[in-house]
Structure formats: structure tokens, C-alpha cells
Amino acid sequence: MKKLVYLLAVLVWTGSVKAQDGGLNFSVGADVVSSYVWRGAYQEKASFQPAASLSVGNFSLSAWASTAIMGSHKEVDFTAGYSIGGLSLAITDYWWSGEGAFKYLNYGDETEHLWEGTLGYTLPTKSFPLSLSVNTMFAGADKKSKYEEMKEGEKDKNNFSTYIEASLPFTIKDVNLSASVGATTGKGLYAPEASGASVVNIGLKAGKEIKITDSFSLPVFGQIILNPHQEDIFFVFGFSL
Image (cartoon, rainbow, N blue to C red; front, top):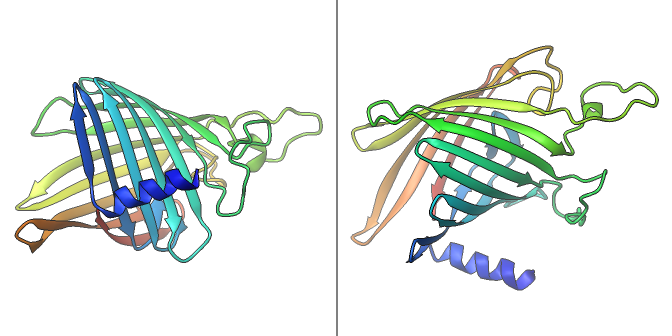
């Protein structure tokens, strides 16, 4: 495992690697961000976030991770996906127990993994490529006991925390922008104290490539994120390798 992590780190730091062979596509890259904010919720300070993906035809497998540059936060996620036209389906295994947890292979009743199912659709038009997605935690550590008191002897059922998002990419001059709005359907992972549906994420992201040399440009991005439910706001800056 240590050798695999080291090899991935080498590939990431040397930039983005892509290979194509008979429909097989492989890519590796990474982001460095000033803070890690996910679906409107603060996770950690400055972080390094490598990613790798493998796709064949309409099927894809991807890995994504986040490690705090000055902290103990550690997250490793794996996703299997299928897409056809503007429709996409995915299952993701999330694990973010942190450095020193040492229980990654625990898949029993006390697991810290969360499994999410995603259904997404992008409108088939270049002038208005609106994307919609519904994301539901269907198994794992997303239990009702984390958000409400359980009666004695009552089975701790899955909470099915759900996050719904609409996003729209667009371009102004040479700047790529994306506006998004995300909400949760009720009490759960994204809004533990909510009594009903809540808007938890309103974001505007802008990205641009900064020319460093004649042969190398560095993609940079900034993102403003507002969480109306928590009455909190974030500004995130990052760059991609």
C-alpha cells in the first residue's frame, strides 16, 4: 500500500498523465486548495487533493482523496460510474475518518464508510448545459441515531441523507465559471438540526489558466460558497496540477 501511495504521489506531482489504448482512458491529477469545503460544509484547512480515473466506453472508475497539509484530516473516496448521453449513474464509497483511524477495512455495523448513490442529468444543449443531480447515502455510517434520539430497543436505521444540486457552467471572455445551488431534503448529514428541506450550498466558481512559460500554463480557480442554513460563507482559492 505504501508503494502504491508513493507511486500515485509521483504521478500527481509530475502533472496530469493521460493514456489511451483502444478506448481505455487513464488520467491522474491533483488540486491544492486553501481550504476544503464540501457541499457547503467546511472540512479542513489547506489540503492536497489527488485524483485518478479509468474509463472504458460508458463505464468509469475513479479515486479521489484529500489530505490536510497542516492537520490530521484524511479522506479517500472511490466511485464507479456509468453514463449515456446526458444521463449518469454512480455509486461512491466515502471514508473520511482521518489520520490514525486505522479502521478502513471495517465494513461491519460500526463502519465509518458511507455509500452514496447518484443520479445525474445534463441538458443536451451547448447554450444552456444545466446539470441536475440527486445524491443519497443509502448505507454505512449515515444512521438516524446521529441526528435524533433513539428509543430503547429501536433499530438504528439508515437516515438516507440526500443532497440535490443544480449547476450551470458558462464562460465570460477567457474565464470559465460555474454557478451552483444545493439543498438537502431534511435532517441529516448536511443539516443535522434541520426541521425540513434546507439550502446548504450556493456557489460561484471561476477558473482560468495562467501562462507560466511558452509550454506550461497553471490552471487556477477561486470559489465563493454560501451556506444559508448555517449562515456561513467561504472563499476558496486553488490550483490544479
